[in-house]
Image (cartoon, rainbow, N blue to C red; front, side, top):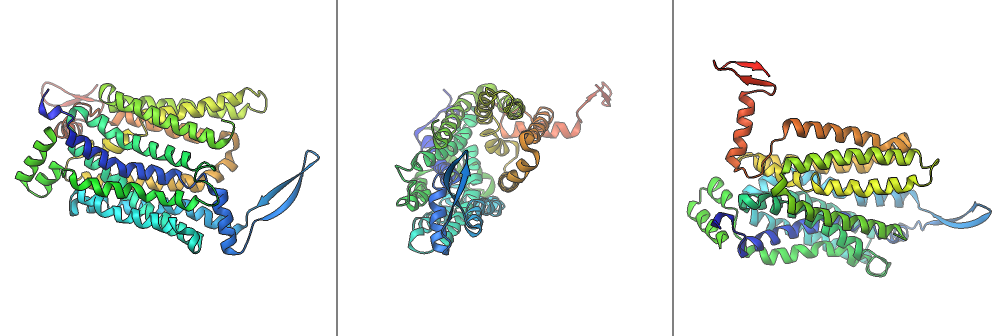
Length: 430
């Protein structure tokens, strides 16, 4: 086996250390959901507006329910959405941080933010929980916006070409593993209860501690050293080193398991089937599933068995997402751009991702209220458009060097789609 194609211990350590940041990102995404009711109660006590109980008559039986105070709802919504806002802001800084001191030192520096965020949320019961949780989530969002750009950038630059796709997909695998871990630990009999919920949130910063211990043992990106810093000997040294469902919570955990399993499927297939192929399969499958979900919801009141159609479509939607559209965009951006514009491109992609998350999170309830059972038609239309765009404009990067990928775009600029060159050098429609 050629040395450039070897999976060495140094490379494995570097990738494992890097994706700890991705694990932390996924954990932070999912950890806030399970203990929602418990946290809302603490918010209510801190604000002096304990939830008011009221009696409601339903089917001739009186059922005791709770009405959450509007101020609690506001602070809870802010606790969730502030994470995305922090990510949007910091995603613009990925290129600057990555180029300032390098990818490894950049990841080390931003770990300080994760530790601070974990401490703020871990001490939530010691003061005003709504203030500390919101502050911690904001800082953690700022960290995740940086980490979600630095990690795929670093992995894409240190990975051998033959394994660049599989190793790049590990970023998404770590994210969904983190989500699943947070869902399991968030069960009420573990940490998602009145006593331990600050510990559950505080653990968000734990991977940063382990990563900070391992990153000093990892090599810097040779492409960064050579091209950005002109450190030729250091780059050579680095390259040589590398060459050696009864409850909804359980249904949610089931989705997390599917996330993890099918991301592993993508890891196995991405360097065989190709990035473009898996993305097209994933987007097309998601589009069909969105239509199936709509059909199931529309006819649910007519045919009770349509609930199985909807549930199957939801789980298949997740499967198709994790096969391609979930993991591949994180690292294909690093493949499509050369060393110079790569940090800026990753920053722009990260900002787009975070902004989209924020917009969907804030507007979906209103869109659902407006569209009712047809809410997923909007997503089906968007997915169809993404599928067409990917088919027409996104090149395959499997097995290509960064220079070969750049050459594809250079060729595309010289020869527009739908034309071919004649023998005289002119272009004619095909």
